[in-house]
Length: 207
Image 1 (cartoon, rainbow, N blue to C red):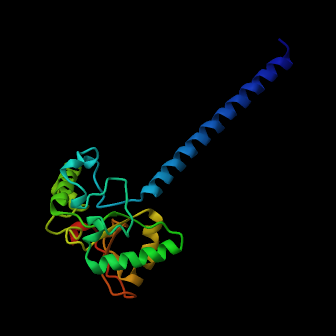
Image 2: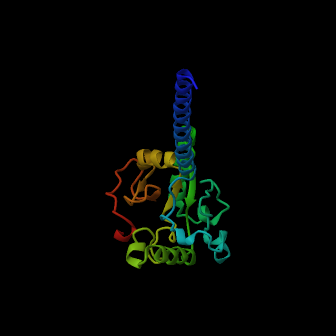
Image 3: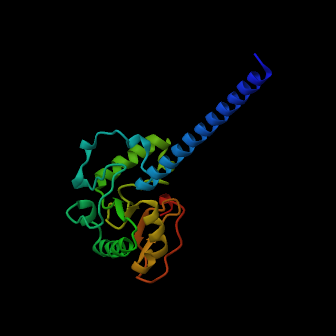
């Protein structure tokens, strides 16, 4: 083997190694982008729903309880669904007015949680306790049936991070406010249109 052949083989190995590194970096980047896209498509939603709820038999609660499948969303105008229809009328009207304005600006506005029955809320709380290990910790993310604003129809969770961001900026124009600092998706009718939103609570347990 000549010196030229040896040098050429070494060069080929270096090129192959460099190509492999580039390939791995591209794969890693694509994986991150796909993950971010999936997160954006779903949005962060609904009472920080715990993993313990995933895979649970949804027959225990249904559409009549305000159930919206984890990872799914509904139109803010789906008045045929109890999750939307049983929202407090003022909140529902404000949310729909805001949705029209957001959609006009090409912001996809969807609802991941609206009204919920007390029975469904208890299922969520029990799952959260199983997930987080104590009721005290669980209540930072999921209220009791007696205290939940979803059960009274006074709260709505908006899906997709772009809609959350839009509503955080413009929600007060419609009286809508993000009430919990740790739930960017949770909005309540907490001021008059054009008014100032109250200071956010740290989490649901502070309400």
